[in-house]
Length: 431
Ligand SMILES: NCCCC[C@H](NC(=O)CCCN)C(=O)O
Image (cartoon, rainbow, N blue to C red; front, side, top):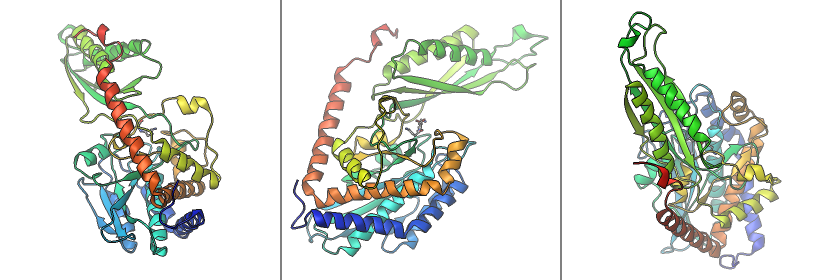
């Protein structure tokens, strides 16, 4: 593969070493940034403090243009450049994403404070080397996007629709996990909120006057549990009862459920139809009214870019990462992310990284691990591997072409598949 201009492999290594040096130099302020976000956890679309902290971070760094409240209240954008190359050259716009929303009740149990830190660190590392190597052969712009609401809603999808990803050539982020993995199969997901409306009555004196909304919720819950046995092994559905009544002696007039429906690819229509029957039949059985509200956005599965994957893996290995080879981990659905939607509009990667703890995501133990100093080494190592991968893309122009071709091919194939294949089991779903 060609390396831009007369820059050889030695130069590539010099650049990568500099990236790492710049990230190491910033490690104290990066830990402070991450710790501040971790200490004040905020849920989706309410990440005001995290937004302000990140905006302050980039405003205090030299040379960044910072836009607070960028297209969403708690999103931001920081850009640097264009820099290098020659006037009139095409600009390569390299994106890094920061997430920073937490979970209700258990804080940063998914480690999004570390995602914000990785994004900031990688961007600083890349900018650092570009500044110190004034002979960048390509014209480069670095864009950091602060993307709220990954756990709920899908801030990245709002941002895609608002045009925030337009002009980006390649995009990087990484997610905390139990292991280093270049790719784990993230699924498509659609959230659904269901409300049953019944009628209150004295539960002992006039129960026959009541219409029990809690019964409807319980029947629906059990319907979905029975449905689960009939689903494909890699489909998932799971939910909670959010409201189930006020007092045992009041027949519940209102109940509410929230469920997530997940499939490995973007076609959720079959699962949606089956789940909807479960919700409606519970309403019929109890005489309740039902409101079924699907979330405004569906998350897509991640479209892989193996060209970027391989580069990331090579860079990670030079930094001592030991990528998991456990086939159970590599082939088991790992949840969902709104980066899936990003991966269909810009080529990118979303690797997973070990944070120095065996705790599982979405537990209090993981919250503790995400705030611990021990996570720092792994977090910064991940940022280095991402920024080194960006250096590969910039200094080896054939690579960017390859990355883009693979992306275009992937989008084309996925679209062809989802148009031609009828949803599995659709014929057995009455309409
Ligand atoms: N509301 C639906 C989105 C849920 C997203 C959430 N994401 C994660 O846990 C991040 C890690 C995914 N591998 C999920 O429940 O999957």
